[in-house]
Every structure is written in structure tokens, then in C-alpha cells.
Picture 1 (cartoon, rainbow, N blue to C red):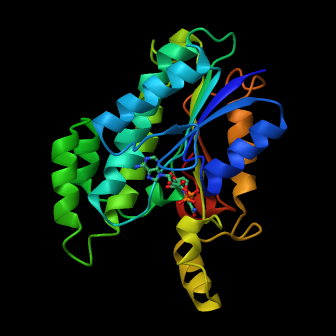
Picture 2 (picture 1 turned 60 degrees about the vertical axis):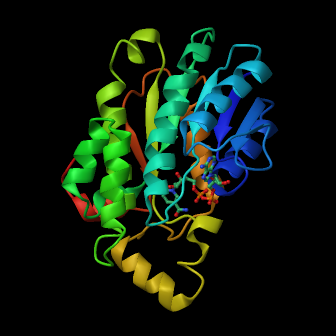
Length: 257
Ligand code: NAD
């Protein structure tokens, strides 16, 4: 059986992905701050190192797929630390363990929020992978009500662009590892719960994030797409951002392909 690493495995999309892969007979090594095979905090260097060591130990040194799902949507610098640098540390840190697999795969979770307004300075600091400067910029954005929302969208935009830039490189495509992302719309998980608990909230959110096809989705919908991207059948998808968003991308970007 394949061995999969799933970060954010304790809740929402990560939990649904771990359950789906488990049902398919895969060995799943979950990584999270609680209730996981590897308990590690991906917001800082020590936790990221502990994650790589824990996975190396439990896997015996070989994994077949990495699903970087852990994240938060809080309007704070921690979102930059976990969603961007934690995801990069997961993918880059576990890449050596993928090299022993006959069919290695890597997937991360971005967001349709990458299409919403963002902060050019934060995006460029993330693109430069300058964590101290990116955290400092997020600290500034977090201080004013009109800019706090830019932290999450900027983080996910930079993450999607990282996939576009890295997927075709020697490290990934050149090493036979498809690297892709999914970009969900609104998914009914604990992360989104406070934003979608009333009909009024749902209506307001769906105005910014239009989902004409079937509306707000359950986490299993995203898990199924992730499992395909991270599975053996995916031999040629490379550097794609797969929007699992009920049509938000098609509505907001129209002809852009
Ligand atoms: P969730 O809150 O249900 O699950 C996130 C998981 O990540 C939790 O188990 C949490 O403990 C873990 N996590 C958070 N910080 C961590 C840290 N420092 N170290 C290790 N693990 C940590 O949320 P979800 O909705 O399942 O989100 C999963 C991913 O999907 C996130 O990257 C999120 O940005 C993305 N996403 C969610 C939605 C949505 O509407 N729910 C939409 C687009 C993208």
C-alpha cells in the first residue's frame, strides 16, 4: 500500500482526506497540532523540523504522497507562517522521502481567495521566501480593519504562484514528482463555520465567492480531488491549480485560462 502524509489531518479537509485515503487502504501519517501520528506546530522552524523527523521515523524513510493541507484563515501573521512557510517546509522537507517511491506525488491546498484583492508587498516578500519580512508586513496589515483580509488572500496567491514556478523544475517534474494544488471555494469545515452559520452570512459570503454550481461544498468534495492528484493515476498534471469552487473562478476571471 501507498504511504501518504497529510498535514492538517485533525479537522476539515485534512481529516476528510485522511479518512478517504485510509478507506482506500493507504497508510496515512497525519500531522497536526493535536490528534495526529505526528504532533507538530508548522508555524515555526522547530515544529517543521519535528514534522520531517517524525514522518521519517514513522515511514521508515519512504513516502508516496504528500498532502500539505494544514492552514488557518485568521487575519494574523500566523496565517502567513502556517499556510505559506509551513506548506513549503512540508513539501521541500519531505521531498527527499518521496524520491524512494515508484510513483511520488505532491499536492497542496491553496484557495479561490487567491483571486480576491491582495497586498503586492506581502506577495512579493512571500515570493522571495523572506519569512521575517513577510511576517513583519503581515503585522502591519493586521493593524487596520481595511487590510486584515489581505493577509490570507496574499498568502494563498503566493502559494499558487509557488506551485506554478516550482512544478516544472528539476526538483519536481525533473524528479518525476507531479506537484499541483487545489483551490477550494467555500467548504463547510470548522474554519468556515463562523462565516456561514446564518442564511444572511451565507448570502453575503456567496456574493464575494460566487458558487453557481451546487453552492457551499462538504470537505469530502475537496478530498476526492486531492486524492486523485496525489494518486497513481495522475501521471501528467503538472503545476495546475485545480479550482474546486462551484464556479467562482469561472465567474470572477472569465476568459483567463
Ligand atoms: P480546519 O480548521 O477544519 O482544519 C485545519 C487544520 O490545520 C486543523 O486541524 C488545524 O489544527 C491544522 N493546523 C492549523 N495550524 C496548524 C499548525 N500551526 N501546525 C499544524 N497544523 C495546523 O480548516 P479547513 O477548512 O479544513 O482548511 C484546510 C485548508 O483548506 C487550509 O489550508 C485552508 O486555507 C484551505 N481552504 C479552506 C477553505 C474553506 O472554506 N474551509 C476554502 C479554501 C481553502
